[in-house]
Length: 354
Ligand code: PEP
Ligand code: MN
Image 1 (spheres, protein in one colour):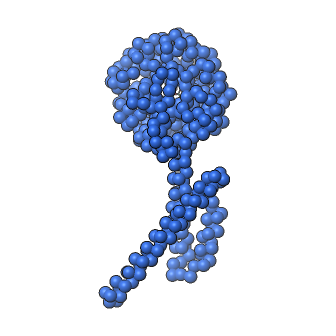
Image 2 (cartoon, helix red, strand yellow):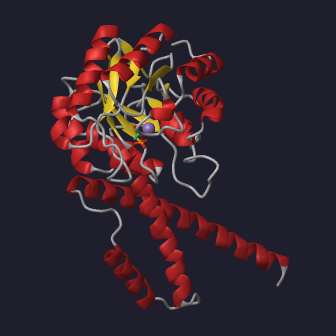
Image 3 (cartoon, protein in one colour):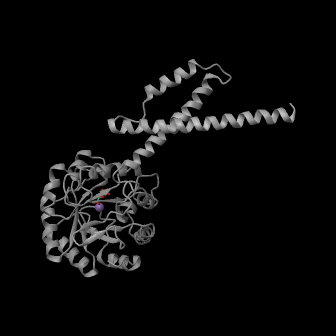
């Protein structure tokens, strides 16, 4: 083939590439409009029956030179790219998305602002066990400058034979102690029927990892004004995590904080794997405050301080830790709770000015 002929054919190919690009872009724009229509109608983006019909039609009309399998493969790639376009448009539409709302959401827990410039520290026992245990912890936290006290009253335990928490009585203890010391409180609620009632006792409702996709609980949390601390599920993707937050925000409760608490991986050196990259990703994707629970993620007191520092360095708006007056006798998570001396050392090492 002469050079002239080759150049001419290449010229034709360039022109076809241009036309294909224009057609592809046109196809993408139409797919986006279809995506918006599906969004309005609440129907799923992926429609395998429609996709099969389109592929069968294309194969029926295929006159070569590409064989049918190649045609199927090429068009399938195009369909997938269009679906991705529709899905990323969908994420932009989420109320929790930063694309929808540029400014950081600041959650007000009384006079404590979460999501502002200063990261907060949430500390307290795994479980509320007694008035004395909570009071001792609160007194120490107050003296250390901590303003938000945590303590579980409803404990979602792996075994039904383990301590299940004091229930409402636990919430009452938290309230009594918090009122005495002027602290704010966080406690987990597991039953949608308790969500409204909880507002009388505590300042923040925690939705635990095991309940991240308890949709009835999320809806109930969306129907109140109490701030919510939503934990990432044991094996939840970031996308699933954000959709769970969307359940709450879409019902009207905009006061939602996200907390990374480690996810399940094959690694056994820590209780869970602290996904530190989730912090900057969540901050980029969403406007909600992001905290890190260094206790349940690592399960190791010897690395909690460096992990808390990493969380703050990655942009976290706060850190959560468990502290107990006598961890050896704790009714849950005995091995991972810090005693008071360990907690004070942790504070000093992390340098959080609480
Ligand atoms: C807790 O914070 O008390 C707790 C049970 O944590 P998680 O839901 O993250 O396991
Ligand atoms: Mn615990």
